Length: 276
Image (tube, rainbow, N blue to C red; front, side, top):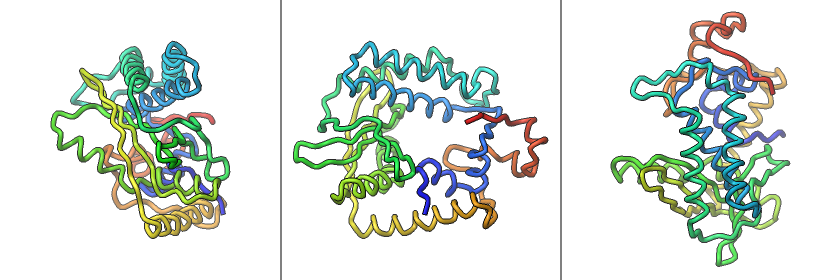
């Protein structure tokens, strides 16, 4: 059975057609804050990866900026329409400044793990890529993921943001893959939240799950991957979701599915393809 990455599986579980169209390379000509922040987070990971490899702070900043420059162009952000009404679009220079400041905060932080592997790819497990495979002082080896968040106006929203990472599909995937590769059961993971604001903060948060929870997650994931593979092989048809939105707002394929009925010629009005 084929194993799919956490991001691909998440898209599929949101909507099967969102996954299909995304796999085909379709992207909306509109973009929003979530797209820019996703780019910022990936750029921070690239910068921190340089730091973990001992390449020095200057190289870490260069890696961060280079990632943004390349992906900004690849995603064609300068030629897409900003869909937000409550805020102005962030410029490439502003995103570079934000990302570099977060990389600096990370490099200066005292964190409870030693980095064993950086940007580690589980090649046989959906090519899932963990930001860090770390080792705690207790000797425990676990996956650690970097997350970038703006500091919210109220502390309650910080609590909600941190709570969202409990039982994270992405991190459970890393735990399972690490267990399979090492032969040592991994039921723990860590999240490092890089809080962006007037004064950045870096916070490490540990999580742990039971073996029963991991077993149930794996059974569910295998059922999902089997369906994804069957769709890829043309054995079954994808299904439309009943809701056409997520926590990030309307589905980016809203018009593609509901107005253009997934007709590629019509979709060209509001979508473009990124070649892989």
